[in-house]
Image (cartoon, rainbow, N blue to C red; front, top):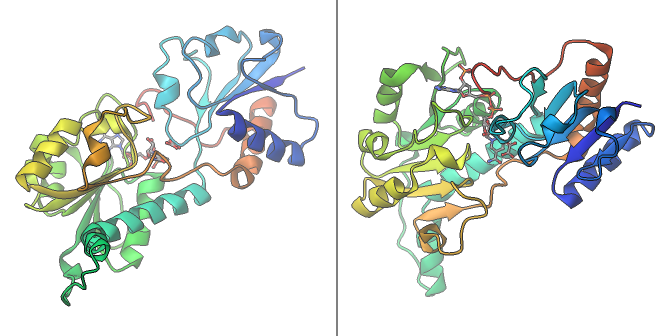
Length: 310
Ligand code: NDP
Ligand code: OXD
C-alpha cells in the first residue's frame, strides 16, 4: 500500500496530517521515525529530515520539501538524486513574506527602536519628516517570493529593484544580473533584502565588500537563509556606520546560540525564522494534488532543478 512519510516538528506534523485527511481520509500517512516497512513508502514530505534517512526508502517516487527552500534536502549527501524533489510555492506564504518585508523596512525607516527608547524614558520626540522618496529597496532574488514582495513594496509607494540570475520584466521594477549587475544595484540601494535560495553561489553573498558598495547608512534585511550573511561583517559594518540597521529572520546557526552577540545588539531587529510560514489549511489541497500527480505519472508542480539547486 503506497504510504506517505511525514517529518516535521511534532505539532506541525499533526496539523498537516489532519488537513490532508480532511480532504482524503484514506491517505496512508506515517510520521517519521515510525515509518513501518520502508518498502511501502513512495512519498516523503519533509522538513529537516536527518541525513541518510531518505536513502532508506527503496521505492521512493517523490520528495516534497515542506518549505520553499530545499537546502535542507539537498544538503543530505545521501539524498536519492534520481527522485524528483518539489517545494512549496504558495500565495499565503508569499503574502506573509511580503508582510515581514514591509513591516521591517518600515520599522527601520521609521526608526521604531529610537522612538521606543524615548518612550521608555517618557520623552516626547521633536517633530520630524521621513524622507520616504529616497528609499530604494534592492531585492536579492526575484523568484516566486521576491517578485511578490517587490510588487507589494511597490504598491506601498517604495522604489524597488531586484537581482536574479535571469532578466525579469516586472513593470516599474528594474532587474539586474551577474556580478556587475549586483554591484550596480547595491550602489543605489539603501534597503537590501535577501530572498535567495541557499546554494554554493549565494553563501556569504552579503559580506563586507557588498556593504562597502552600498550608500553609507544603508540597511540590510535577511529572510533568505542565514548562510548568505557573513555575520561578523554585519557587526563590523554596523560599528563603522556603513550599515545603519538590520532585520534578520534567519541565522547561520538556528536556534541562535545563547552567547551570540546579535541577541543584545539593538541595531538588529530579529525574528526566529518565521518570516513566512507554510500554513496547513492553505497548502493541503496543493500537496494532495502533487501526490495524485506523482502516483498517476503526471507533471509535478514546484519541481526543483537539481542542476542549479533551487
Ligand atoms: P525561487 O526559486 O522562486 O526564487 C529564487 C530567486 O533567486 C530567483 O529569482 C533566482 O533567479 C534567484 N537566484 C538564485 N540563485 C541566484 C544566483 N546565483 N544569482 C542571482 N540570482 C539567483 O525561490 P522563492 O522565491 O520561493 O524562495 C526564495 C528563498 O526564500 C527560499 O529558497 C528560502 O531559502 C527562503 N525562504 C525563507 C523563509 C523564511 O521564513 N525566512 C520562508 C520561505 C522561503 P532566477 O529567477 O533567474 O532563477
Ligand atoms: C522555507 C522556510 O524555506 O520556512 O519555506 O524557511
